[in-house]
Length: 441
Image 1 (cartoon, rainbow, N blue to C red):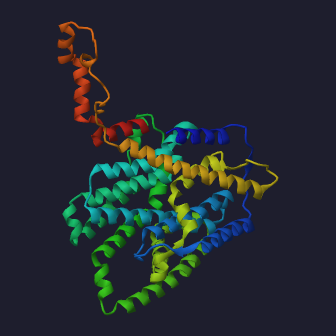
Image 2 (spheres, rainbow, N blue to C red; image 1 turned 30 degrees about the vertical axis):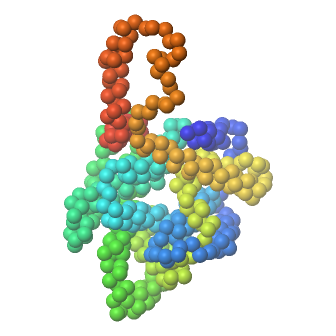
Image 3 (cartoon, rainbow, N blue to C red; image 1 turned 180 degrees about the horizontal axis):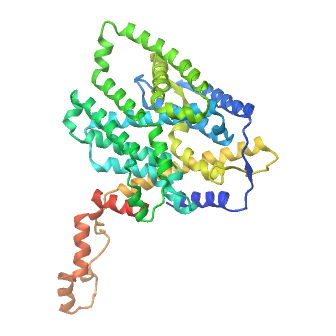
């Protein structure tokens, strides 16, 4: 908790005080290309065997996936590339890839573990939001400014709710009807403005309904594509691989994926503007996402190898995404933070990156520790074996019998405290959710 608070204080000093200079961001094409190629070269140099099983979308592969995507997003924000449609559009796909993994990973967990309890769900939401909520209070910003945290959280809840309702149907064909119904319901909620923003306004919470509906609606179907992929792999993966036509089907899938990526880039480059592309994105995003998944898992060699540098970045991708607002960049991503000398742009970039990555690693460890502490069961402290009752002390003075009666019959407040300890009241996850929601509001 001390490390977490100290880093938030450092971010406040860097971003909200005039102690460090800030530079205006400008897009320079060759610098963006150079940063991207340098990251690609570093990732290729650390390519190694990482997964003995060679599983489809294994943990090492998804960590690598999150890592290189986050590095692209950092370069995108650093160079103010949002005004370039040819870069903006693929970055929208990167966000869709994150959400695809959210649907795939959590669906796999719920299907395999059959654990629909609140304990794991609470831990996931705490881990996702602890940094965003902390920054909102320290920096005086809105929780919605760190949009990926609320976006990821709501989709985790939707995946949980979809799998939690009628869980027995998850292992029958009815699961596809559940996915379709869930997609229709939340699409209608977003299209017909049914989010409870009016209630939040009455509670004094000012979140941008338009911004939220844009963020949610832009990737409204990709999570269900991830869930569908997980169900296909879990329910039919072994049967497909054992089928006599599997080699032929695999070759056709690789060919379709190899065509899907260039066709996507042709489509996005031929849109008049990024605003026109945004209208198509919910429907076109599954093409590059699934194409990448197929090509990345085309052979056992590709499935079992990954880049250690990208994996390391992927392990702290959440912290990299959120902390960049105030430490890597400044003024809520509107400027570049200067820690060395504004005239030495690349030197400053190198030094700032080193500090930024180191702080994100500490934030990741601290956030995990805070989550574990908040989720730890609460139990009364056992009596220490070293404590000697007063009656056994040598030459202990005699005490009045009234004190013995008082010790044997504790007062009402003492009985209440003891009762709460025995009931382990803070282990009640419903109460923790209520307290957490009150804190967030």
